[in-house]
Amino acid sequence: MIDLTWMAWTWPTAIFFVAIVLMLVGMGVWEWAVPGGTPRVGILNFETTRGDRLFVSLLGSAFICLGWLWGTELPLWYALIPCAAFFILVFRLV
Amino acid sequence: MDKTWNNRAWFLVLPVLVLVAFSAVIPLMTVVNYAFQDTFGNNQFFWYGTDWFKEMLTSDRFHDALVRNLLFSAIILAIEVPLGILVALSMPKKGVWVSVCLVLMALPLLIPWNVVGTIWQVFGRTDIGLLGYTLDAMGIDYNYVANPVDAWATVILMDVWHWTSLVVLLCYAGLVSIPDAYYQAAKIDGASRWAVFRYIQLPKMGRVLLIAVLLRFMDSFMIYTEPFVVTGGGPGNSTTFLSIDLVKLAIGQFNLGEAAAMSLIYFLIILALSWVFYTVMTNVGADRPVKEAAR
Image (cartoon, rainbow over all chains, first blue to last red; front, side, top):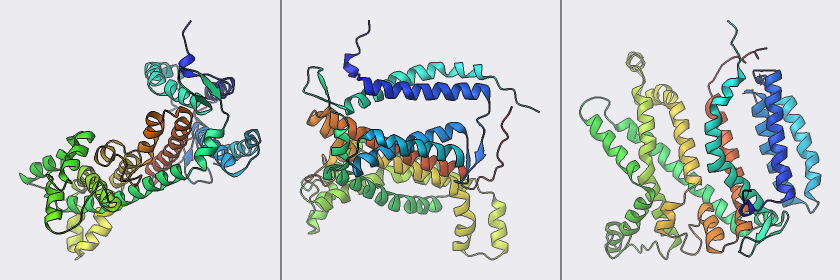
């Protein structure tokens, strides 16, 4: 068995990475089902594919979480709500 | 004609994916793991939640280093870009001097970062360095080891010396690609030198200039070796940029959790800025129709 103790794995971080991998797999399946990336010009006035929209959503969510940690004392779990809203907005409008 | 979509081609990128996994993804995963834990050595870690991030986001030390880094990037861009354009415009377009100028311009780019730092460290010394000794002889109180303004001036001057050539070479490439017909038309119209620059040369250099700005911004935002060799982040913390502070935190203080949280915030800032620059670079002036998705 490979010793991975140096990577200091924890359940929450492992779940986080599994979620990212699942998203990528989901995007792969989506691409297989509907090839081409569905490019379109949204409110940012330039062309984006669904991969671009996922990237923007993930990056934006990371900053939302940082902003949450900086600005509130509430648990980080609540930040998932604005993150989900941001995902929906990006996928519908950008 | 319809494109043929074959997603099996993606398997060809597998070797690169494996390499990137070992060189970037696995280390990044480890940093994420460290950012939520604390350690006292001996490979023992304790869950610390999101507290490192909270501490980092409210830390004056981090804010100061970030502001210093942004200021440094803004200053060197404000100097290197106009200076690079000016030098590129002054360079000959034909003849033997072209090669001489190009080689001279390329020289600073060939010198390794730590050597550049060492050169300037010696150059600025008042006892044996040409710059420091000359300034001292002129009665100017210059001491980059003790005076923050002198330290900043030295680091900025060093960066300008090292990297303006890159802007020059990129701008020069843009300039020589302008067909003579443009200049002939401008001459017939009686355009002034400024009008030629404003309406012909500058627009034609736009794309390469954007690449130059991107490269110089990203590089200056991640600068480590040169200021570390010259000033070590001092005097005090006056030239401690983000990367220098990060190394102090991770290796100097062995505070892996806090350093990991800082790395991730630093990484996210760079990622966001890279995306913005990339998007601007690939979309400014691009007037292309949206491709229809192949179905």
